[in-house]
Length: 213
Image 1 (cartoon, one colour):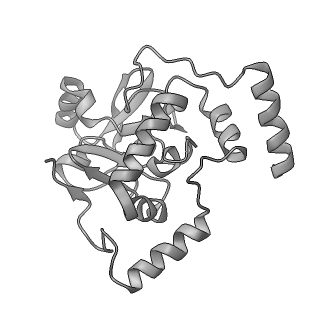
Image 2 (cartoon, rainbow, N blue to C red):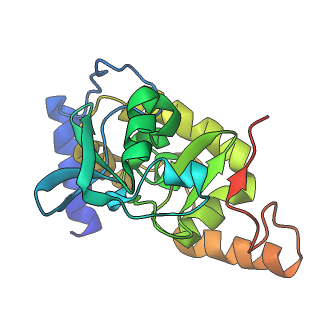
């Protein structure tokens, strides 16, 4: 879709009020809807592309869940590698659910709910919460200033994304960029520069888990 067409669509949506945020029953909590889901087999609203939400915490790894060990929570499906993990999630879902509905945290930083997944090298447990990213580069860019980017992501989630139609919110913000927007190329250039200078807050190969305070 061209930029001109996106801009026309965004203007039309604004004119008809179609992008107005409606806060869901869960409010603006950063691990409630909308949700980033995928389809696999009988599961058409699958979270984390089938990865086990509990395994990130207990095994420090992205582990695929079994299609036969699953449960539905808030209208979406989670799979687990073991029955014990399923029981643990069922007991404390808020502890294990990905933040920002499982969308890429770096995307939400720009008010663009897109991407996500939680495969290898595209997730992070930070201060006791699970964040997922559209890929390793998205995670690397986010971690150039994790605290600032989290502050922005929480702001845009609460004011624009939570309870909204994610697709319409995404299209609007792909045209009307947030003030701090940087392109992927600009972010990668900055990351590579800071890598060469060894000034990245999180250097490649650092553990995926940052302990809670």
